[in-house]
Length: 439
Ligand code: UDX
Image (cartoon, rainbow, N blue to C red; front, side, top):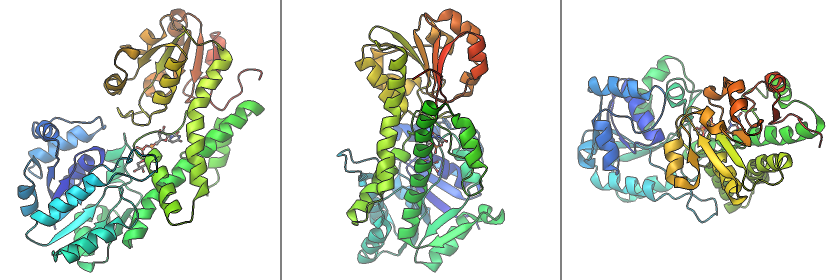
């Protein structure tokens, strides 16, 4: 039956979780320390770009299954299940460990302000062993509470789809009572036979890191194969296709590009590496992936410099700033490393992105110029770089682009353009994972 749920944290994960759980028929109260976010959500306005989430927000708030509050007490007094979905950013000192102060604060708040039984669900990505530590604290504080590790597998830009069609729900706990309650929370998924994995806390925590780590390995591997293909004259698209036809490999996450970004892969690979080192069993493959990904971003600039050795004073147009399509998020985006390097080399940089420009502007201010569309970027440009696979860039009017550019050179790092068309129109071009010039 419907559960009364509190969700702490309305970021990319917390908001999708709060809205999704309400849409399952639960009664959800969401809270955040950022009052302006709560205010905007109370006014019915989305605070992030996530396709499909606005409609669900409207539907569930008007059905009175979802509300937003500033009062923790109000939220906890009316909830039996408390999801913690606050951020766990890198701690900034480069050792790969995450900053868990926000989770700690939320856990303390719940322990201090709960006056009845609670299932405390840690959805934030936390270091392995953290759930057990929280459980020990709760028992020591003699609180009537069970701890559940319920890692998220939501992709930005596809969070709605992923929430309603997960490949699996992973739940780590030592409490039968909590298990039954979590079955109720996710009964809608139960009904459509989504697989549930019931396991212990540490395994649930590690499944999250291990899954993201493996996906990052796939990407780093295909990117290094792309570099080899460029030298050999092979075609990485065909290679990825041929690999993916093997059911044990699968076609997904084999798209060569400028390197992975986002708020998860970079952070989770470093955290996994740190955890393994702390336990004295380094996962050297992950260490190599972290290095390879850093290099891949710089290889884009190196390949550009082969075309134009002296970048100083040249006008470079950048199409795509978000770390991937269908998001406005620029965290760890390859565009950041690449634009930094181009500015260091003295280039004049013009940028466009359908969704992420406001975030880029916060970081770069007037160091680059912001264009209203992809054609403005190409005006008087010596080179055009496609860094994000937005659909808008798949159907560029290349004639119009060419006539606007100072010199018609395009470097497509996502293979969204058609090689034959570029040839016919007389562009010089580079495509990731494909040989385009004599070495
Ligand atoms: C990821 C995981 O997919 C998700 O399960 C987890 O919960 C959070 O982290 P996300 O970071 O939102 O999701 O994006 P994802 O679609 O996984 O892409 C991550 C990065 O890899 C992006 O920079 C993307 O451009 C890159 N990528 C992805 C590739 O370069 N090639 C691919 O084939 C796939």
